[in-house]
Image (cartoon, rainbow, N blue to C red; front, top):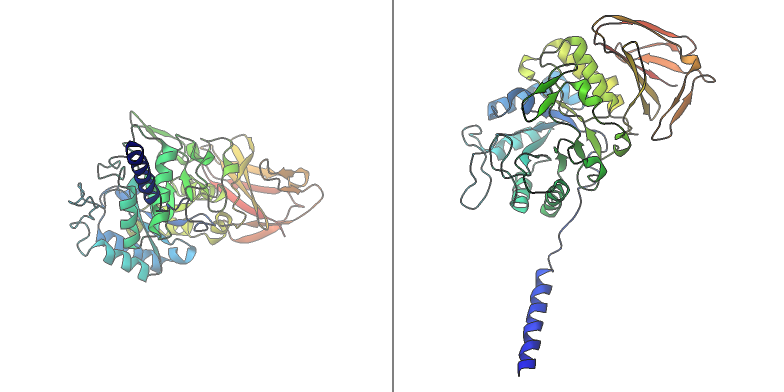
Length: 408
């Protein structure tokens, strides 16, 4: 009888285990949602947690009326601060009814009705960076909530994450989104501390490579326990990671600060470098206060085409001499060449094409200009300027940029 009881107990345990394993957990990100770098607007850089329904509707309307939508910006992402400070009795996240009196579903419906996509923010930790409820321990519940709202994009931050591992935390949320069933672009905002480029390709569609950006050319803003960085610091912060970036798995250089207080030349440089780096392009400015110059920079369709090029190759520095840097980006049809003046004085460029051989150190693309002459187009001015038979000579302002496309 004792032997029989043991068999029955073992069979019961075995059956229970089998029943527990009948649920198949989906794994891995939704593939193919970001074959070119995502483009849109995010609320954080300018508004932080001071967001509301009126602001988002106005932003959406301006995106449509200004030509930003037509230029390719199609995501509207609510960053931190969209929810109440506590979950409800069932553990659900609660959109703030004071900020969004019509309800988040109505707002999302409005965004979608304009032909745009909608994104939300949360955090892998117990609380978000702004002190709102984080997702730790609620991954599958929150993923079902996002799916029920019909969102298209999730930015997932890394505050208040003591005791957990980045790869495991982001993989869990990725699997939760996949299991919930609604295709959602998954943006890892882990700041590059745990080298996500080495492990996140099957987990997310893009990953941050640095701490937060600051609206400056080349600076560090020290906040005590962390720093934010000027856009050129971010460009040069990580060495040898361009090989990890490509279609549907992008190195994310952070939201842009174009229109947030830098000079027009610095804005142009910032935008051109994000295009050269194949970074996601998320505006971070107040569209209601946007100048014509800012709009012109953000909607330069020929530079955007460099960013959105189907090869999806991140650019690299070719040379650096007398504070003039030359950056190259192989394209599906040609190369983009950016001259960046890092100095605070105007400079002159005299670049001899005919003795140059371009070689991509990571992807093998080559162009030998010693034997081949190709057309040259100025993407800032939107005009052809000859061929590589003639040296490129130009003045370039302080902190400014000139981007050319070469090829036939």
